[in-house]
Length: 358
Image (cartoon, rainbow, N blue to C red):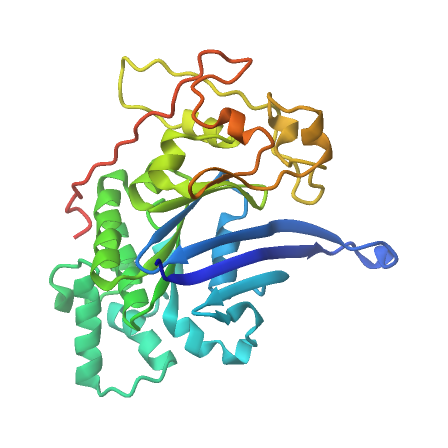
């Protein structure tokens, strides 16, 4: 039986919009960044969260790491609901849950050396170590993060490192307190394409070696496929489809998922690209559409989609889709009125990393 290290249930994160002094009698207005999201992450597993910008992926990760206080819902970490923990009691939890941010230059203090940046979590969590033990711990963390000659980097500042080295230092900082879970928010999107694969393979190696679970947030479906064991597709603050990664890629069912996959570039000059149309622009998260929140952009929407919100339908074992017609669409290579819609195509990511980041 799989061991759930994290269980998210009905998670909501609403931000109130300030309306000014003259609007004190009006009802409050909220941006519904995350709206009733539920999923599980197992020990040693990577759960990918993919979707376009503004869909709520990063906010979900920040809520799980308790950088944001959720509006509602529960986040069970080893059966303890950390969504309800007061801020003053969060230190013990944060030792077990660390975060890797998108931009390593922004997430590292420019006035800290590499040694100070990586050792700082040991100070925060009051590890009783002398300077030699702390130095050994930092060097080991840098080595685990794939940095060559870590002793040569200890006195360098972030601006003296390459982008790949900075992100590896950020990974070492997360690893030094032996976390059980890591929230990785677009961890390779700021890196050169030539060194992305090296950092991705490093994270996969850490997962296998240390059995650390990840929430891997990305907008890139190709990277999500390469990294994730399970995948959730977010749209307007909700997960519209989730499954084992290969099942979701090969049997994409929700119209939004199919549209995302059709946008993945294929490095094959003979490949004939087929558009999966969606209409208009993404609606405002302040005024969500009634019924299925994707129906204003869906070319297959029917009357029921405009009136009711669909519940998740299990079209295959572990494959859930929030669409009234999921069973009809699952496994179909053709969706009326587009008879030539093809299956999602394979996505390749280089397995060899450039050494430029060393």
